[in-house]
Figure 1 (cartoon, helix red, strand yellow):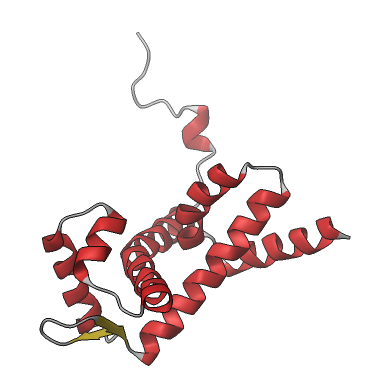
Figure 2 (figure 1 turned 180 degrees about the vertical axis):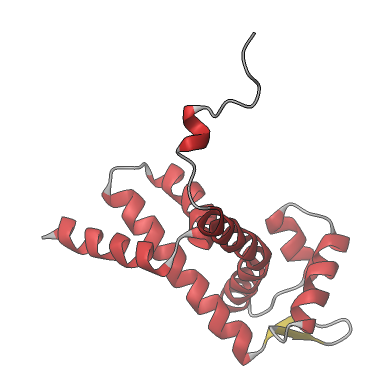
Length: 152
């Protein structure tokens, strides 16, 4: 009979618990900001292309219900990223614009990197949408440097 409490090789090689906890905390933080980043970027895009951003268009583009969009917009208002008026469009605050620009820049860095390593355009666009929220500044810098070097 095997000893249940015997340390496996996996257990002996686990990273420091504090370091591991910090990594999971970083992911949780990214998950919390991901939706806000996606929404402010989409609102900014809609305003630039159509002159306005409305709940119905956000719901359509994200593939969610109007109720879901209303909940997110309420949270974005609370966080000072958007403002709305009854029966009017959604507008970004200066902080909302700043977040949209930063999110768009992160997305472009990841997209450029994925394309530079040979990922197809469609796959790169899909993957960049998730990776952009989780990559550290250090990783994004390395991605950018790689792209620059690959063009030389």
